[in-house]
Length: 325
Image (tube, rainbow, N blue to C red; front, side):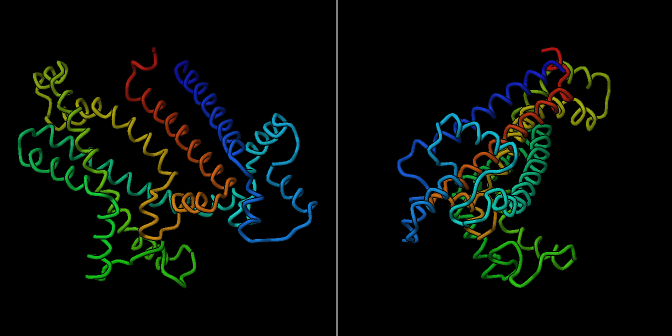
């Protein structure tokens, strides 16, 4: 419990530091978002209207410390400001409308890659030198070394254009209304296959190789030798003794990857025109939509910190030595 409280305190401080940087960095840039917005649309407005918009975006003439305290209060109320590129939609609504698709795509691909990659790594290390250990690691690392956009375009050309098996873009078919029907869920799953498949192909080799190397070191430990001497079943030794301890580095990597899932797979969503936070972040940066960019960065930061705290809790369960550290 003491360990978790210390870690929680660390994450609270880290989150406060991220909020502070998120507040000051845009204000250190030349110009302001209001001037940028009106230079794009070439709008003519009265000075009082411009001042009202500046207050709306938190850019009034108040002292910086007052703006900072107001910004902190707004963050904890869920008010991240108004999006410039999608004015007058609040930033929180823009993020909420996109984050579900990002979690669906990134989460599905991550879970498949982690489970399949770790399982293959366990088997490859346990049967070291056999076919699985000799062929799969170099093959998957070779596939993962290709530029992602090349794999994505190759998958689009092969499965979407040439064979016509899978749709080319978007999260669901045009004209289909979102619902909990089998038709809609099946259509979403069909559109998910190609982008998720390319992410899995790129990342699975790293998961397999990492687990294989850790597993090889674990199988050389004395307690594995003792378990074998006791005559325990090989499957029990492999999963309950070796794999459980070899899993700790993978748990850390999974926690980091889980946090960054919220950031979206930028190239994935761009190539497949898949709606999500990653594509929305690219759009907001191109449009100099500072409030939306700040909101997305803050969301990603909160997700990464929450995922790492979840990993700390899992660590306490998997490794009892952490409880007394």
